[in-house]
Length: 262
Figure 1 (tube, helix red, strand yellow):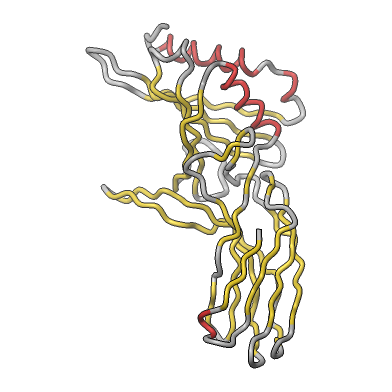
Figure 2 (cartoon, helix red, strand yellow):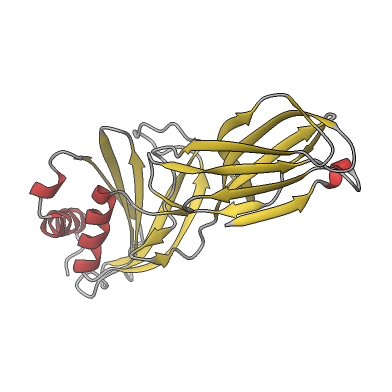
């Protein structure tokens, strides 16, 4: 994906920027590679820096209010100070690290409704900062994440939507100030007991933490409640587990412990 935008903060005749990604698709813990082309305008300028930032839309709850914001959660400097002559072109190659906890945006080639992810180029000239436009990025799941999602599909669950919420999950090691929730409609065998299932991944280089939240249906004399499950997946042994059977066992045990049979 390519974007080119005249830096309005510089006025007419200022430098322009073009960012080209070799491949806009990536995985958590991987890289985005490409080049930033900076072209001088009508007069020489001093560039203070060129930086890249990975951003996503985050839902924020504050008191009784709820709103969305675009949050940068990882940043790398692509170039330090340099002088850019009139009409001069400067090509800046980059290799941008994608954090392990980066939310995924695609499942099975389908974009997750509700997700936004982009790489933003920022350039400062004469103390004026232009954050540029977003270069869309697609984040595909890790193999271990794919196995968990495939197991849910095997059990009849269907994707509903996804979002990113600011905050931390109790008892889970997190480095980012937010977490992703991927929501599923229940499979037929669970539909009488569950309204929806919410799935959260928190990945590290060594393992994958998986958090499941069940939004349970309320009965005539009972209120609906949530049930939480949490487990860790070892990348080295993930292929040795029948995840559909494992998840089905946990779901049944969780619901039966709370008096919900199906």
